[in-house]
Image (cartoon, rainbow, N blue to C red):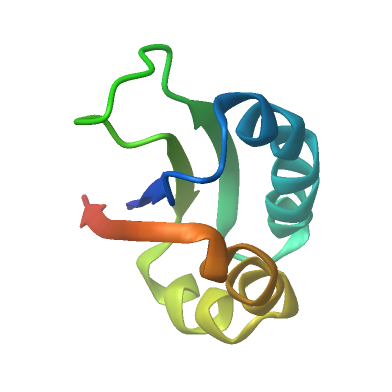
Length: 96
């Protein structure tokens, strides 16, 4: 299954700040690859900087059974703790 986190930063977080955060966000989610049931992780910044676009997409290729383990893992919790307050909104989408 593919698990997507699609996020929009608050307006006060500049594009330059977002770009500077990408290596840290990529490293944080990169730890997931060592978890059972996680096959791949991609962190992508939107290439179009417009107000009506989301800024960041995290795509996690995982076995459906790995979702509860991912939800409870430290890396997911750190993402929420560190970056959650910077987000205006986010969308979670899962597909087969």
